[in-house]
Image (cartoon, rainbow, N blue to C red; front, side, top):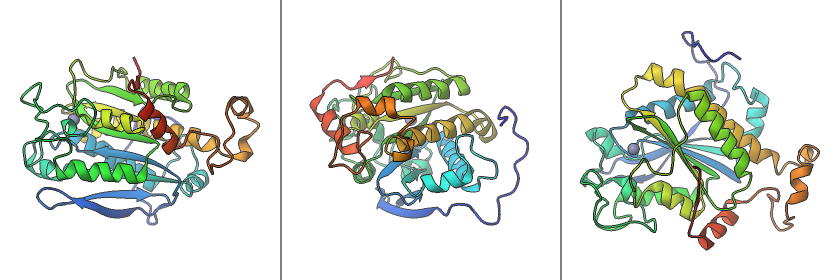
Length: 311
Ligand SMILES: [Zn+2]
């Protein structure tokens, strides 16, 4: 219940409540495997957590590993969900963890991949441009010219996440959400993001940090219909500070989101959701009638050229 102080952690239980799986979905320019862990067996709904798109931003890699570990160990209840509910949710959902999205850069301890391309300017978003706005952000010789970018695009296109959460680090900590047009429950998700930011004690920012970011993964994601929120962790924090400050608010957001998008297609919750239901069109052809499926979001995003950004 009280998450303001963290005593030394108990050891891992001998048996984990959940068994993660590992899958290499592609290879980097230097032929390192690009792999993700997954928990949950749901085929219908997924959420993607990723970090290390910039190889020198280790802070996000630390946080992602803490999030994965905290869910696996589950030695204290995650605030939003008890163990039984968690296992039920994970029969419906798959949570993807991509801890090192740019493995060559991580080994080289640099922002760019081995070809000195900033992957977060290499995505085939509509605003991609060949000339860097700043020498620090080389976009590559073409959109998605880099193997790592191609692999991440394939992964996201395959799993169609209902939310992408990407951990980076920056001089100041900030949350940068981008939503797809007409996203279901956008008001509630905005409120969850506000709570997340307040609990960490950081602002919710604009879609860019005062400068344009053509070819950014976040822009590509939202154009493809995948909402994304980037967490910029304050640069240079140590692992204990990252755990203390960011871990529980982040887990809370993840499960708030999962719970929200689970409730809506549960017949059992029809009483609670009756107000929402009455506003929604019934979709008899869908197995997931009560919320906007990733494909629907995808189609709607394509018809709009102006993704919605939080202020
Ligand atoms: Zn970054």
